[in-house]
Every structure is written in C-alpha cells, then in structure tokens.
Image (cartoon, rainbow, N blue to C red; front, side, top):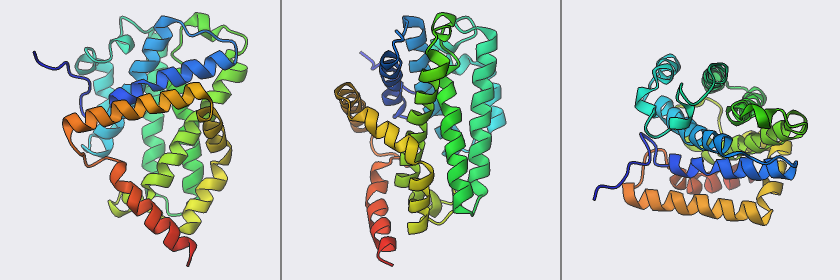
Length: 255
C-alpha cells in the first residue's frame, strides 16, 4: 500500500502543522477555546507557509508566482483543504495572501541588508507579521472573544518573533555562506539579534518551559526525525547548521 503523501516540497511541513497545537495552548492561557475549524486552519497554515518558504528560497520561485498559485490553489487543495476557497471566507483568504506577500517582501528586503540593526528589526517585523497567518484566519466566534485581540494576538506575535530569531541565530552563518543574506554573522550579529529579539525569545522560552509545550516540542522533533529518515538529509536541513553555529559563535566571541 502506497504511503500517503504528507508534503509537497518540504519534509518539515508535517511537523510545522503541529504549531497549531502551540497556538491552541496559547489561546487556552487566555481563556479561549479553539474550535475545530480554526484548529484545522492553523494546522494547514503552519504546513503551507513552510512549503511556500522553501518553494521561494530553495526552488527560486518568485513571490509573485507563489501568490498567483495560491489564488488558484489547485496544487495545494489535497494537502491543505481548510484554506481552500470553499472553506475560508473570501476576506480571510485575501488577508492570508496579503500576509504571505508581506512576509516575502520583508524577507527580500532583509536579504539585501548589510546593517545588523536594520536586519534584526526586519526580522522582528517578519515575526510579528507571521503571527497573523494564524490569528487572522480564526472563525468569527473566536475572533469575537474579548481576550482574542487584546491578549492572544500579542502573545502569538511574541511567540513567532521568538521562533524567527532562534532561526536566524542558528541559520545565520549558513544563509550568509549561501548568499541568502549579506549580514556577516559575527559576534556583533548574534548580540544584536539577542538584544532586538529578547522579548520574543524570552516569551517563546517561557512557553516552552510549560510541560504541555515541552510535549509539543518533542512531538514536533519526533515527526521531523521520522520524515527525515524516510526522505533523507536535505539541503535546507538546520541539523547540518548546528556545528557551524557553535564554531563561529564561540570563535567570534573570543576575538
């Protein structure tokens, strides 16, 4: 029996789907129960944005073409049905496309920056915008909760900012070496990222210290390992960046 396909271009997408569980846990902290429709939308959004990022960064597809393909949606419908036109209100689909377009544009600007402070601030903006891939597509019932906009949305922005900055800390050297960014990842780079992203990273670490989040991280890691064993090492794997991160971080600290 053939194995059911779990992703289109990026084998990390199945683990990114589990970020919906993280959003659900954040919502619960503020007394908001996540309905099934919203949960499935969040799950699809987590996997899909991971796929689109890889389609853009590793396959060289332009942001404009990606948005055009999203609007048609046929190639995404089977794996990510809850964001299809028949399952998501037109105004929310428009917001989703606008957010995705904005994320690509911020990334394109950041890739050309050489000033470390400006780069860190662009990553901060990207993290805050990314949160809205989830927060803006919830059902109207969830959006109407009194704690949704005032507490849940800021908490999600901090959560995604933390994720974006941890990504830059780990992948900074490999991105620079591959020409994806122009900011040299020296000690000043790492220190600037830590300073600008401090609130988001502390928030993310605080959430991950909670037992339920610890279980979520383990589940994501287990899913990632399983798909990686099934599909082999990929060019975009962060695992191969870990030695570079520690070697260059320690070297520049001692300079």
